[in-house]
Length: 175
Image (cartoon, rainbow, N blue to C red):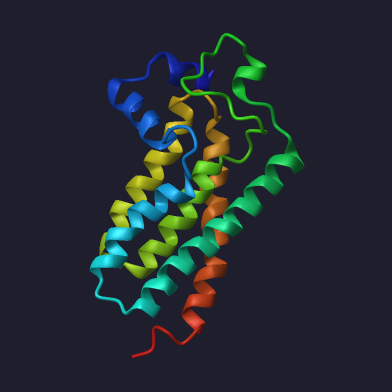
């Protein structure tokens, strides 16, 4: 009912959000989308080449681990998508060919948000808004249940905590 209602009452702004985070065929979404978000911050930070590489490495380590964790959950729980339960739901984008729980966009986005917020704390609220937008886009598209999204955000933050522990102990942040 949550998914059906979200699809049936979707606003123009929500529709725009769906397409923004769908990125299109052959795109590196969502980790690539987060790399595009990160790039101007990293380029503008005045980092050395090594620090820039470290920033992208931290982000992409967390994104990789988010993928492993998310797809492990997807195939451990093997939850069908809303449209597979209620065929009257019309998805806005093609139906992904894998289980719904947990949401990949939510998991990737939470992991990216936590890493980028560590690296650029003054922009943490922006990163969080992008995380929430990416996560909600999947409900608006009709391909995820709210629980998939909530669990994905928690999962992504938990995954990022491992990368952040590494970042905080690698000595690179010492004055």
